[in-house]
Amino acid sequence: MMHEPAGDDAIPRPAGSVRTEGAHSLDAAADALVAEQLSRKDRGAAASRTHKDARLLGTLAARLDLDSRVPANRFSAAKSMTSLQNLRAHPDFEDGWLRGKTCLEFGCGGLNPSGTMFAMLLQGAARGFALDMDEIESVPLACRALYRLASAALVGADGADIRGTPVEILARVETFDLAKLAEGDADGLDLARLRFIQAPLEASGIPPESVDVVTSNSVFEHLADPEEVTAELARRMRPGGLAVHAIDGFDHRFYQDETVHPLAMLREETDEPLVYGCNRIRPLAFAEMFERHGLEVRGVLESYRVPLDEAQIASFAAPFRDVGREHLEVARARFYLRKR
Image (cartoon, rainbow, N blue to C red; front, side):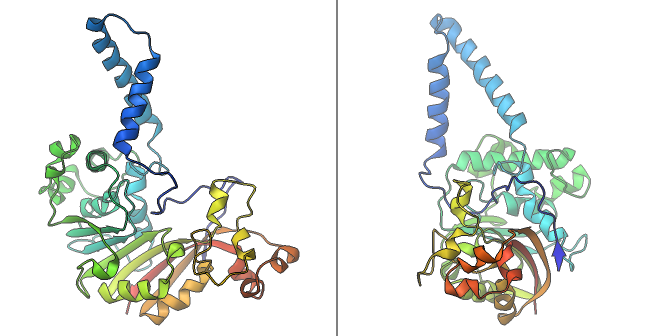
């Protein structure tokens, strides 16, 4: 069992694929923000205002660009690199292993849906599928995020640790038009190599035993029937294929209201499959499920624990207060799997 220290008292919210309440068009939101900023500035003569506005927006864009190069920003290169970095930590991964492989991100989200798979292509994968039920919030922004990742990879900036020379990295994505992606133009994509699929897994069209790598981040805890999904994912993996799944067992209300105990949902007496959007299966319990479907657990990283006393455990609903402390306290875990 691998362990990762919890760090300080601040608990970062994982970057999963579940849409936040009140989500709306990013393009419309950006337009509204720009309009608001312009309305607040001093209105000069019309002839000079265009120049002033351009300078204002340029300064705003540059400042936001500098401040947003962190994994919490799903458009950042750092965020797109997360799954590749996790894959490199897999006990069976070796440099060069990705060359020619087919990859799938299950639950990619609608913000930067293809960033994770594009990172895999930059590192040598042949093709990538990005799968989610959400629609893409903004195609231009998603395209520009890919260009930003490629640019960061070429100079080794913003956490984009893509291995290889600039010439080698560019050759891996030579079928993409990076200039068009920089303009937010989806015509710059090579859809034969990088494809976003808005559909349930069973209706995705991904053939059995065709995928070498499967990744997900904060998705399994939101599935009403994770057993069925695990079977579907395993069926599409080639023998010897690798998977990395990060699972978050927090009560997700905690991320909006820190007065909610991180495991408060375990107190609810109900048979509903989802409580506050989560299935409440404890992260470590997924190990047996993966094994049942031919996914050998090669390692588990416990990435966060919630210390519990006896009174807190006694307050949980019957299915949970009888679970061992080990399974209750591990609130986040990352699984490294291999298809038998």
